[in-house]
Amino acid sequence: MERDRLQGLHWECFVCGPENPRGLRLNIRLVGDQVETEFIPTADLQGPPGVVHSGIVAGVLDEVMSQLIYARLVPAVTRKIEVTYRRPMRVGVPYRITATIAGENSRIVAARAEARDPAGVQVARARGIFAPLDEERAARFLGQEEGISAGAGGASRSGETAAGDGGAAEG
Image 1 (tube, one colour):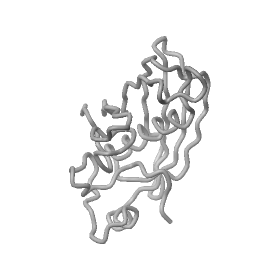
Image 2 (cartoon, one colour):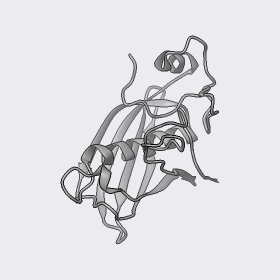
Image 3 (tube, one colour):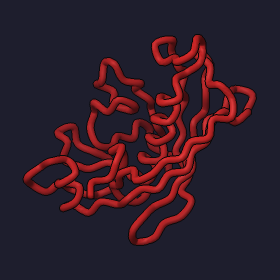
């Protein structure tokens, strides 16, 4: 199964939203049992000169894990993410970002993501724990009075479905 342009919570998501003029607009694709995307960081995303800010790297890794969980399983929010930075991610270099599901039970989903440079060298990796959302919890998380469809695999432009990314779980 392969799908282009996975879309989670809304079309203005900073990482994947095609309608966010300041966003990264990553085209995250579901390919088999994983997701993948290409990320070519621009100079406006740097921390130290020529090096991508670590928060941007973490955001990209979080988003690919979130989108995978949303596409393959259920809407979920990030509970915890741990990122290991192995080498600097350089501005202007194309990176291949992938994510896989590491495990799941009724309360959490665990995922892994990594970023590799054109030579295949891993520059960053992440592990994440995500909390699945049923329709009621998704609506509360989004601050909506009415429920939303919690079906996995896509979203309407009107924001009627929940997604995998949220930055923090509601409690």
